[in-house]
Structures are given as C-alpha cells and as structure tokens.
Image (tube, rainbow, N blue to C red; front, side, top):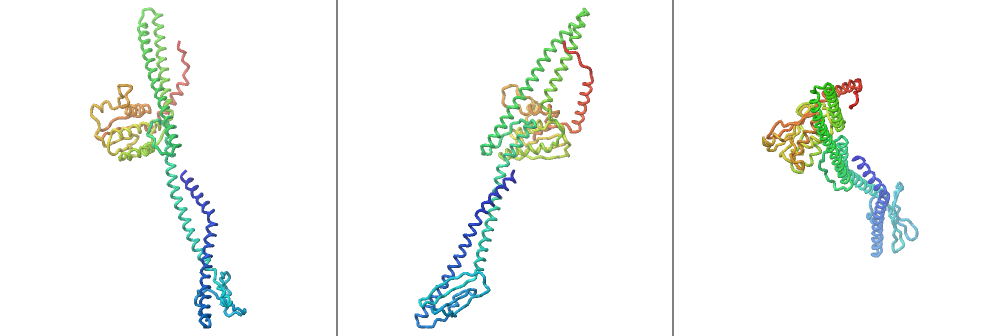
Length: 434
C-alpha cells in the first residue's frame, strides 16, 4: 500500500509538471527573445545617437568607431539615404539571426544583425534550471508521499493485525491507538466492540457449560449413592436393577465428559504447531507504543533455540497480553520477555509481591462483581485450556513463566487421539440409556 501511494503521488506530480511544461517553456523562450530584442534596440539607438552627434558637430561620422559599440559577434548594415551601402558587416554563415533597425535624421538606415545562438543557449540554461527545480519537486513529493503513506498505512496495518488476531481466537481488548482519522477509528472501535462481544459470549458459554456440568454431576452423584444402597438389598431383583442403574449413571458420566471435552475443543480447534518467537515479537511490538508513552522499555531475548510449540495462537496471544499488561500496570522499569525453549518468562523490575500475595496470585477475586484481580487467574485458565502452564519462578524482580507444549509432543498427542478415535469407532454401539 505504501508503495502504491508513493507511486500514485509521483504520477500526479509528473502529470501536473507535464501539463505546465509547454506553457512555461514558451514563456521562458519569449522572455529570452524579448531580452535579446531589447539589447539590440538599445545598441542600435546608441549608434544612431552617436552618428547624429557627429553630424551636428560638422564631423564626418566614423563608422568604424560606431562598430565598437557592438558585440564582436554582432553584424552592422548601414544604408545611406541614396541607397548606397557603406557598411556590410554580416557573417553569411550565421543561419539564425535577430535584427534591430533604426533610421537617422538624414535618412541613413542602421541595421544590427545578431546571432540567435546566444538566445538558444540562454533558453537552454533557463530550461535546465527549470528541470532541476522540477526534479527537486518530484523528490520532495516522493518524500512527503512516503511520510503520508506511512501515516496512513500504519493504522491500517494495525487494523489488519488486530483482525488477524481476532480470526486466530485472540479476543483480548488491547487499547486501540487513535489515529484521528474518523473512518479508521470507527473500524478499530467496531473491531474492539466485536471482540468484546464474542469474548463475552464465549466466556458465558464456558461458564454455562461448567455450571451445567457441575449441577448434572451433583445430581448423578446423588442418584448413584441411592442406587449403591439399593444394590445392597437382599432382594435379587432390586439389587440387579440397582446395578443396572449404576452402569447407566457411569455411561451418563462418560457422556457428560465427552460433551464437555467437545465444548472445550471447540474453543481451541485452531491448535497447530507454530514458532513461539514470532508470536512474542508481534505482541511486544503491539505493546511498544504504550511503554514508550510512560517512558518504559519492553524487549525480547531468546536465551536458547526455541523449538516449535503446539497450541492455539489466539490463546497464547491472550496470555502474553495479560502478562505484559500486568507488568506495565503493576510493575516498574524495563520489561523483558525471555524465550527459553518452549516457554516465555516475563520479567519486570518492580518491587515484586508479598508472600501472602504470591500464594494467591492466580486465584480469582472472591466477589464476582470485583473489577480487579482477574487477569492472572484468567491467564492461568487460558494456559491450562491450551495444555500449558503458568507459574511464578521468582520474585524481586517478579518472574512469571508461561510454558507451552512442545511441537513434537503435540504431534504425538494428536496421533494418540486419532488412534483412540479409530478404536472407538470400531467398538459396537452402546445400548441407549433407559
């Protein structure tokens, strides 16, 4: 996009300069021609004035002295009143000339013939100056177009990156950098609102699934306890029915487990093998402006070669954003994201935490309506959903380690799951629950 803007701006400037080139060239040539005519007119008038002064003083005019008033390249023709040519000083090899004439009081006609080559040279010199100015204008336009293209492209690139993160399942609400361009700001606000709504819907869905599962398990556990008591009955029929009921409760528990696993897999169906440094660097670049605004620094260090990891890019990005935001809001000094194998250690130079706070740092708030204290608890839940871990590995400075599943381990896990599914498909169908 930036290159297109620069090329289009240069093309517009070239079209404008091309449209102005012909009239400007004509004006410059006409100005040079008028300057030459004025010079020749002044000289022929000077010759006539000197000639008449000699006549008035009774002296015979010396035409050779009059020739000294001209340039060496100029020619002079003097035609007396009777038609006799007394001077014919014109170079016949000159093809292009300019002529200026004047007549003395006694009828003698003076004609100055000048070579037009200096006129052409003067025109070319001025034309070269105009071409240099035009070239400077093109360079200046290209520079301004590059600056303008950068100012327009960067917000659109951030929007494209944000839309890509939402497509990867990252619905974290990072602060949108206002560009003061109404259309782009409206798109960014709409993306943030859409991400917030989708995240809220997914969170409500996950909570509903967990709550419904818990309630079902509680009821099934109560039924199972009663059936266990009935299975101890002395009556064989009652004991047999109770045992059959216990089998059905076990099948119902297995069904609930499968449904819960399916619900969780739906939120992480984008698991793939990816390079961890790429994700970490992208999110560090996204947070760089906010750190610069508070005169702080964020950097990424890779201590060991990072192997590919297996997980969901969106969930990984959300965990990183939560950890970086926590370091920005509650920490101090520079923040370092150290990539160590399949893990990322977030380090800030703050005062750390107290021992009591460290013990419950990943516990959510007791009050459901509390607005603070949910970030690290949410980060750990997201890490666990994606098969990773989040833990505190140091204090003063605070160090939080987010470790993911290695790519080769993730591949083995997928192959194992596929074999399990194939074995299950080969098993006979279970009888329906009665």
